[in-house]
Length: 138
Image (cartoon, rainbow, N blue to C red; front, side, top):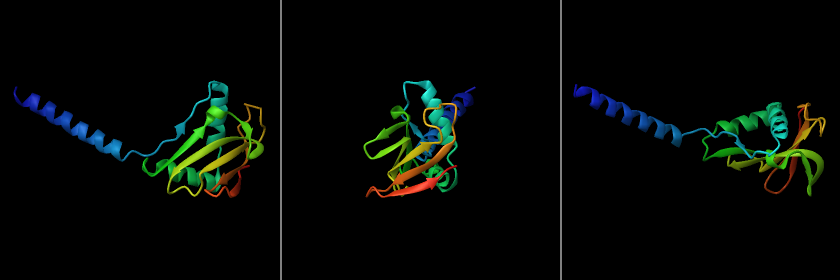
């Protein structure tokens, strides 16, 4: 009878240590800055899923790096919009951490304004000096 409480405490301690270790080495997940409009969230999420090629590889490398090293933030809260630096309709991705050669990417929908169309034209990614690199995504 006395062994069971010890086993229970031992098991609880081992699980706690395992969870602590896991949390300290957790992989970065996408940080999602949601839009109040769920339709826009679904549209941007679907377009993000459709990113292909070298940009997809870069996103995957950042998403699977340790969280302290790299993180991708999807700025759905801004919706699909134009900005002072880019007059094409886009949504924005931001990167934090060393593995990412870019600070941000503007991702261009194939059909801006059509929330049923999750196809992409391309993306322009900007480094720290605001030099853009274009990725064709269609």
